[in-house]
Structure formats: structure tokens, C-alpha cells
Length: 303
Image 1: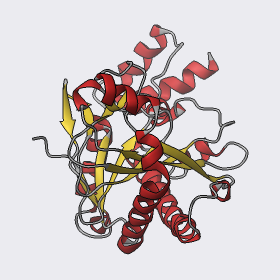
Image 2: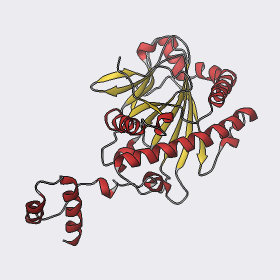
Image 3: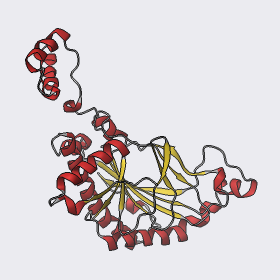
Image 4: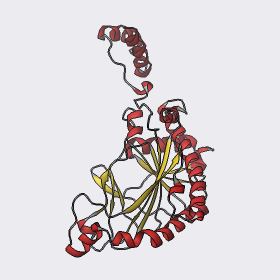
């Protein structure tokens, strides 16, 4: 089994900082996903959010799911249309404005725990965005600013359960996809597996998250902003016979009106005359090519 990169935030403050930053860069560049530990999100709060969501699922979601057309079709005839997912889910918006009060079936205790959890997760997302920018050679606030639009980055959480499935060979928990947004921070089940990411032409099974580990992946907008350096990775959830899997995925995304484009610093120079490049090359042949490319960007702007 592949060893999924683990980023230990405790090691960002000591002798192992450069090593940890290099591992984060490698994870973003070659994997598109990684695990984080000692991340600053309260472990007891994480357990509380999971426990209260499980209670809500048992009380308000489980029965209606097994009565749904998707569930009935699978259990009665052993077949499901290709457009169905074996999941039950809802989505809460947090920033720029929260809609959690609209979910009247959620307990007050759950809403309060969720609000506190999100505050802490946003801090983690912001820190990760700064570290990614540092690794890419950008201003540390670049990604946050690019995401901000007129009202700041958009933050929302998909709360999902992948119920126990009697015939998992006929249906996916969630079909293959990449995530549309920015940085995704996943609080997932500590017992039931099912999440898989595609790497090196094979599906990698993501183990359940133990010991307050959070799982992170990058979405399409990070790939665009990094000019393809940091990839968004295809992933899916497999349905399973052995238990119901919990997934609480928080999306740190651009605002709806944010204008997204690759960071200019990460673009190659373009629209320049080759003769101009040769002229510069003649005096810089034995130097690093990076500054030469940067100089050509300025020449190209003038041209």
C-alpha cells in the first residue's frame, strides 16, 4: 500500500521546517492529497461533531434514505442507474454568510459545535494556503486574495453518510470526480473505509482517519492558480457492506465572483521575439534559467 504523505504541523516550528515544507510541496505536486496531524483543530470538538452528526443521521436521514428510489431499486431488483450515488447528504454554507439556521432539524448543540469547528478549520485552511504560496514562491496571502472576490473566500461543508450497502458491486458511494474549488479539509470516519484517490494509474485506498488526523486535498482552482503545479486529483467513494461511513468535508473555495487565473509569477514568458531571448542568453548562458525567464516576461510586456 502507498504511504500517504503526513504533514506534522508541530515540525513547522523547529529544525524540521524545511523538510516538512518540502514534503508538503511534494504532496501537493505529486499526490494532490495528504494527511495533517497536530493541526490545531481541537480533537474533542472533532469527535463531538462526528458524534452529533451520527445522531442526526440515525434520527433524520437513515430511514428516508432506505425508502428512497435509489435504495429501493438496488435492494429490490439488484440494479441501479449509472447516475446514482449511494449517499445521503446536505450542504451548510458558512462564509460569507451562514445558512445553518435554515436546517431546523439540526440540534442547537450540533449547530454550536459545528460553528466552533468551522472557525478552527478556516484557520487551518488559511495556514495551508500560506504554506502552499510560500512553496510556490508567491506572497503568502496570494491564494487568499485570489479567492476573496468582493466578500472573502467562500466556505461550506458537505455532511455525508455512505450507508451500509447490501450490493456494493452495483453502485458507487460517490462517482469519480475532482473537486471544483480550492482546499478541501475532510473529517472522516475512524472505522469505515471507502474513500479512494487515483495516483500513478491505480486507485489508492485512503484509510479511516485515526487520532484526530484530518485529510486534505486540493481542487481545480488551486491547479489553475498554480499553473498546473499543484494538481486536483480524481477520487471516489466505494459503497460497502460493512458499516456506514461518515464524511464531513469543508470546502475553502473562491468567492462566486472571484476572477481566477494562473499566478503571473508561475507563468512562462510568452509573446517574445526569439532574437531577444538569444541576446539575453548570450550574457546569461551559464547562469540559472529562472531569472532569464523572469527577464523575458518584462521584455515581452514592453514588446
